[in-house]
Image: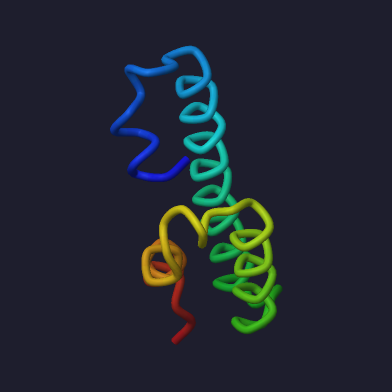
Length: 87
């Protein structure tokens, strides 16, 4: 759902509510996947590139890049991995 579609939610509230709920769920699942993969990276079970490549593909597949933009998706990933850096 685009920002324009969200701003027009009064026009078809039932459809927009469902779209918004789906988009919100996809974003929350993505954030959880980022956290989980960052933990696997921190434990040395995943290479950093392998960890983020899968997340990038998921973000594209789920429409997060189209909705939020690449920079925002990368910030979400970076936030998750920031706390999990290996020494």
